Image (cartoon, chains in turn yellow, orange):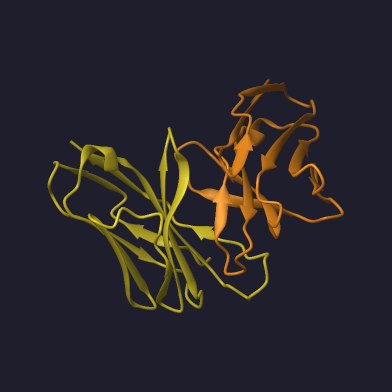
Length: 116
Length: 111
């Protein structure tokens, strides 16, 4: 049963510290997404990649967030320095973008981040 | 104004009853539509895609009204396990799968 995996599942850190979240997409999926979910804003798209190339990171605060895909099996999201307002659940999702509009996204279990 | 708007609920539904709710979207050029389900403290999962002619999947029926820019979800014979948040999702004109999520409608099925 192929799944998206994310590490860590939970992270508590202090303001100003660097946070790195990792995602392993489903093998063979060519599109990877990073989302952030809060009670106030719901699910927000931060960035996404297709065939490891960044397509859109307009949802991401550029000054402190960065997203990369060092290889096809790993996507990372970094926050440096972290702030309390970054506290949220960060989801990674992957999909097989076929070029048509009906592409299912498969979500990982999320990283629950708390910045004190 | 948000791209996708939903009634947050909660919709409290007796077991066995029918519940229906809508969501509206602002971009008339939106290409495709979905309902995702999210259980408490879990990840979203695809419930069903929504096609122009409407479609059913067991007890779930989805409808699309392009003229009025809304989609609906109807759940028949509600089960306790249907308790969840239902996310309305719209694929904008980008065919690469960039989805816009609504904030969700909470459904609580009671015994």
